[in-house]
Image (cartoon, rainbow, N blue to C red; front, side, top):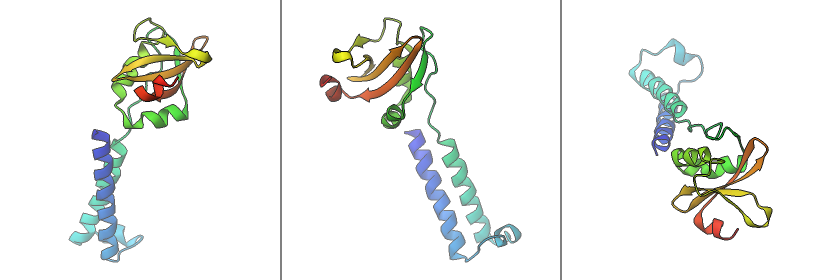
Length: 146
């Protein structure tokens, strides 16, 4: 939630700064030479604040290893699916892979494994030696179909 607020605030600030520049019809190098005007300064300030806020709104990183020492590899599909969800419970579930905790189970028809995240959600993954590939983030409805 915090990242979304930072990202939206940053974009609005950046756009307001750009609109202020366009309204004052300043472009290019003129901005750097003449910032004595209050409108110019405010526009430049809004653009800089917008860039900083959007830069601060990065997504937290996933863990790189489980508690059992297995290396974690993610797929692009998995990363797209988890963008809307808080990262902390996902990290906690990933750490439990291979430790016997977290309701880890083998899925039917050789579809890999799943570990519980909480709230009926699960992470589907595949094991290969000392490596775990996180494949998808499943809601309760999607999980019941496997």
